[in-house]
Amino acid sequence: MNAADMIPSRRALRVWLRHLVQYRSFYVAEWAGNFGEHALYLLAFGYGLGRLVPSLNGISYAQFIGPGLVVSIAMWTSTFESTYGAYNRMRIQKTYEAMMSAPLSLGDIVFGDLLWCGTRAIVGATLMMIVLGLFGLIGSPWALAVMPIIFLVGLMFGSLGLVSAGIAPSFSFFSFHFSLVVMPMFFFAETFFPLKGLPEGLRLFSQMLPLTHAVKIVRGLIIYGRVDDFLFHLFVLAGCTLGFMVCATVSVSRRMTS
Picture 1: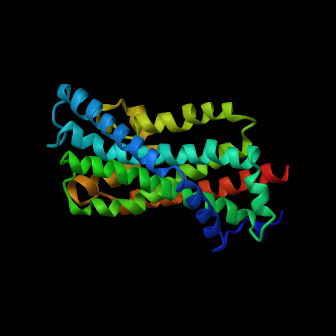
Picture 2: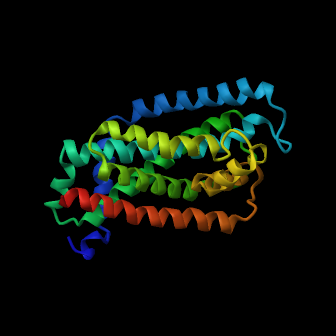
């Protein structure tokens, strides 16, 4: 497979549309379940655990973790889609092979999958934003501006998931992906507690996680309507996303040509 086949074109939108048509058959049940799950997360952590936590920089604990949950849900949604979902399409259903028999390049297929991961991230994050709004935890109209950041998060973790899907020998392999990639970011990306409460070494580790930069942007926009060092955080997030997208394309290419 030559390098030209790994470059996506606008035909990737056809792949995205295929996923959308399939999604229409079960989205109502998924949205209902996700909406209830998001509310439980906020009630359990924000208002349950929050009773034991003093205000953080003048905001309640529920306000603090709300934006972190928005980003985390985007991460989880896109990761499940790009690991279990992509592996199923790649190895079980042979959907990738069928697509490659159509006038689609591998780059179109990978990028179409990643566009879908970004879309799923936006859907999950939007449901969480609605929950935050119902609980009165959105402090700025700039909260609507988080969606492009959420889309980047979906692309980034979709790419990481596709890297794993490209090398996974079975579904069981994804336990390593969630344990080594997703869970550390979920716990140490300033989702549940501020970085200043961590030991120096762990704080440096947290600052190296791309999800930390997404959380800082989203928290700033939802609560304050501004983000300190916005361009730096955006640069790190965009750079990691582009790098992981290249890795995803290479990983899937090797799997499909092996």
